[in-house]
Image (cartoon, rainbow, N blue to C red):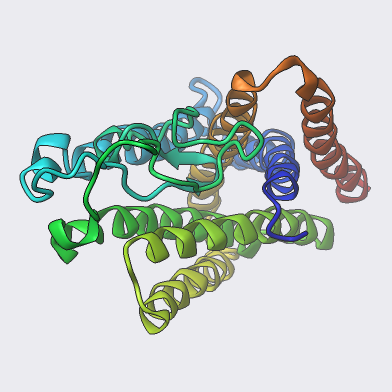
Length: 298
């Protein structure tokens, strides 16, 4: 059940609702409040840093990642005459390294031949079934096989630090609970995605462990940094809250929600109930944050 693609999709939608609402209703107002404490009234400084946070995460995942992933020409030179160029497929939040081979790994979730319509964004076969082909692994150097997992690992580490910072910066129980819920629900999906990517790179169990261990530690690093700067100046908190709010809005609103519902566009009309359930999961996450804000406000 816990590894079911549908369950993971609902969990991801729930996390998206938490991320988006927490960024808009909690983190962004905190940044604006710190700006007011600094008597910054002539320029929306807090919203500037929120925009910068959004742009940073967007650049890492939609610009930098495709530039670092090997192109189709690079891969074909190392694959001989094999027709199968499909590489690893995994969820980053729900931004997926997918498409017709690793060359199309642009961080965009778009079902193709490699996706079963019911599975959506979960990893499946290579998408060129029935065509004559030779095994891919013997033709691809191990260094190339590890490029996509390493990029995914670095992107998830950035996520973890941002999420941990959000937890460490909170000064109320409601804020800590909300940030922790967002981090934990999303961490489950991220861990499965990273493990799947490593397995498709022919990684051994000990290698997967070496990748997951620092990934898990990054969240605690973020929490420690957040706690360390909690009692610092309002200017520091304004910058951090602004950057994190922008990152959370991107992760929740674009990466997760847009990714999950874009995946559903390829499904048939019989999946309308499934899309309603996805929205219900998203709404539940948003409602949870809104209710916790009542506690925070009181």
